[in-house]
Length: 137
Image 1 (tube, rainbow, N blue to C red):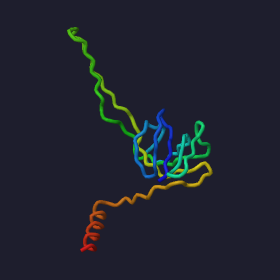
Image 2: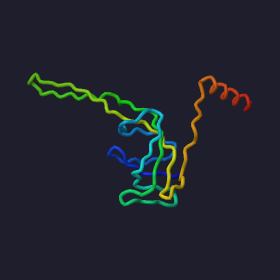
Image 3: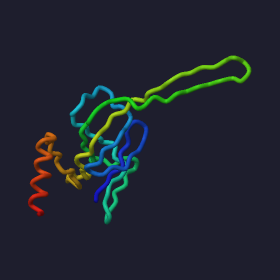
């Protein structure tokens, strides 16, 4: 299974094709758009590894943006004892949820590709499950 180490939002992530992950929010992006990460620090599989100095020129990772959203609220509560002084504050960090589709090597060859997601309605999915159960009986 191929993987790549990408850099985005000041952080580094080891990603595989088909993986869904939360990253720092990407500016000026809308849902269901394709994103290319060109800052690839390393890529490889079980046999070979290509490491950049600091990045691998020509390598890239393609991903789909699933959604932009905010995390749960983190409460910041500061209290100074016996001073009747307290302060309560909250913070919701913004994030982008992405799904990794393809990992390209430095020559442009596809190292790994994610499977296509079929968007079935709930009725169609239950029908398929029912037919599978009948076929196994």
